Structure formats: structure tokens, C-alpha cells
Length: 133
Image (cartoon, rainbow, N blue to C red; front, side, top):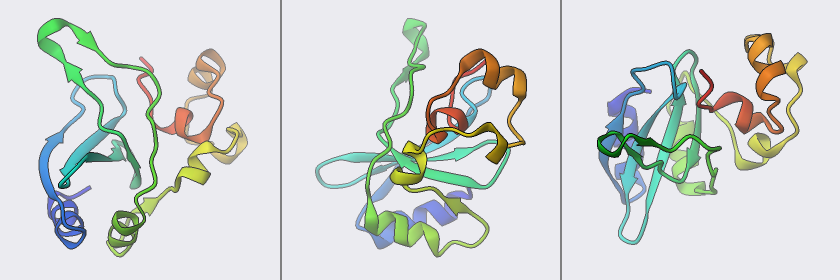
């Protein structure tokens, strides 16, 4: 996800990108750009290894306390932001309904089979956006 694309989508929806968190270690497997609106924040999460995006509640990752939040993301509805992001070419944007669907490993052959067997994700969102090691 290019920062310029995220800035443009945020601007068009009345928000401002306040943080861009790059995943530098093995986990998580996604980056997140945090957008501030007048009364709330949202995160656009992007898989590191493919052009798949989703909108979620921002994650709090505090490395100073050695407390890394690693549970499943909470995906949220943000129709205006989704529409603005969808106009950016080259990205597949998954909706909350798509992310909540039961996970079918056959539909996602690029995922590591050993990880899928071990972690047993229940939903598409859990399988795609994760903290697996």
C-alpha cells in the first residue's frame, strides 16, 4: 500500500494519516496505516506479501512494555473509505462480509499449509491478517 494512495483516500473522506506501522519482524504479516477522523481512528491493513487491503480497528503495539497485541483484528465497516480505496488501482479490498466468511484453505492456496493446520483459522480475516510465527 503506497502512502500516497492512503493519504489521498484519507483526505477524500475527511481524515488524516497519522501513523504508518510497517511490520518488520515475522509477525504480524500486515502493515497498517492509521487514519484519524474527528471522532475516531481506523486502520487500513495491507498484507505484506500481496495487494490485499481491509479496514480494521487500529492495533496497539507497545514494544516498550514488551506487550504485543496479537489476537485477531476487528474488521469494520467504513463505506466511504472503502470506496476511496477501491479507486486505487492494484489493490484488492476485502469487505467485512468477505473477511467474516468461513475459511476454506482451497480458496487460498498461497497460504502455508502447515500454518493453516497448526493455527486453524476460522474466518478468511483470521487466515489472511495474522500474527503467526
